[in-house]
Image (cartoon, rainbow, N blue to C red; front, side):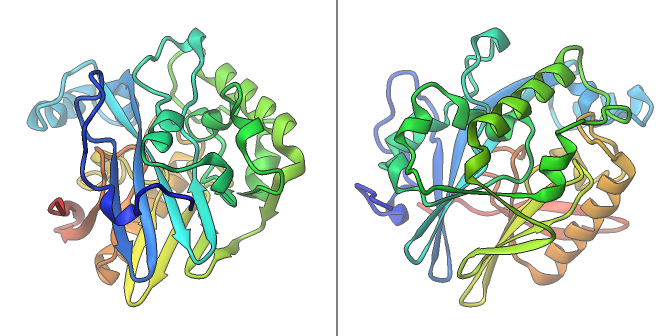
Length: 309
């Protein structure tokens, strides 16, 4: 991975820069495979995005019970770096830096990879869970493509690429402007990286013990990444699971292109994780988002891991 320091040592915050008051990377060992969760920052969004198929009063009660603000709160943006054998895999690429979006606390991935000692030229593969702008934008930052290796492979489901040729937003519930921004970013990304895209239909083994599987739901080609080694398991769920999704997996998130299918897939994944007792990491769970899933009556319970210092 061309690390200046082992991933095993990067769970410690170290000496933060003056404007970095919180740790932004956390290392997890999955058998022989190293996984590093990296924060791309936070994205402020309306709380209505959490669930648009329920009574707003019910949603407000959940927010109050969680000590969260009623109108808008910060959604975490998490990315993972996986090292398996001689392969260094970046799973998703964060939001990037778009001055028109006015989101100064997001788009931190590139500088935080550098802070972790990860050279962009050492990345052999990128896996995209889907092509929403907060998962591909980091690769569109000025100067990034030139620092990536020319033989970089970008793995994404064929259904996802096809969807963004003419995306359907009829079932989403997004703030104004988001559909246009998502559409234009996906179009720009495919134009920029088309020659490096490596599409798969349902499943693909990116490296030993690292398998990406299409789930659909959130977008038609949405995928999850499962890391398995030495009896240990970790699943990066992308946008299948949000903070509210454990207690209320049937609530529809505003960015879901097929909310009913998203709920079905989410419940199936949470059941799988509760049964296998594997680790879960997801894009929009509070950093570092490493934890387990337990069954709680007819729903589920999120069990964060104790931080390993």
